[in-house]
Image 1: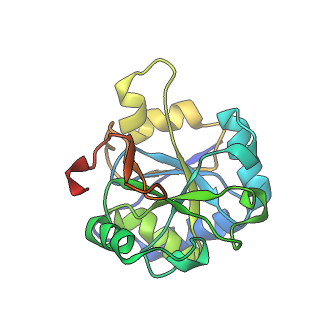
Image 2 (image 1 turned 135 degrees about the vertical axis):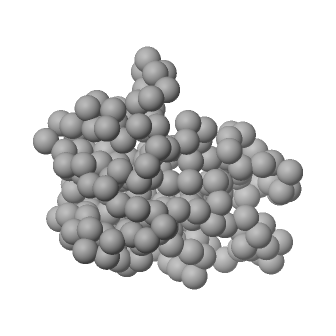
Length: 206
């Protein structure tokens, strides 16, 4: 059964953050707040946990389009090939923020993603998930939680999220009500930036 942990975004409790980080290292699955909708995630280096998320999502892990939640852009080169100045300016201008940017992946990607040529990078404007990543020391893999019946409250109210995901994850972090609009996804690997999905982030940035 999942545990609901209340963490305040204005000042995330270091003890609670450490508790979740330790669980992530042990392979835990968590649902946590971002600057858009709540996300389902795990430690990017834990293959068993990654497999569980892929199974929940009903996809093959090596083909899954999960996002990498990063604390900031300082470790971008860990997973992304060298990018040009214009691309970096777009990232620097709009992150942290409600965007997922598709970038060229490099050979340092976890083994299960090694065949993928691109990676989706997220730096949410949310102190809780960035504190988790900082404590973990590497990105959290992430996918949005969606509802088959499209009942709005399921994706915004942590207690209702807990009811639905109770037997599938280890922790649901209550960071307050979430949004119900996903991130804007922009592909920066094409000759011109391409909007894959228009979400919360404005596309006027391009």
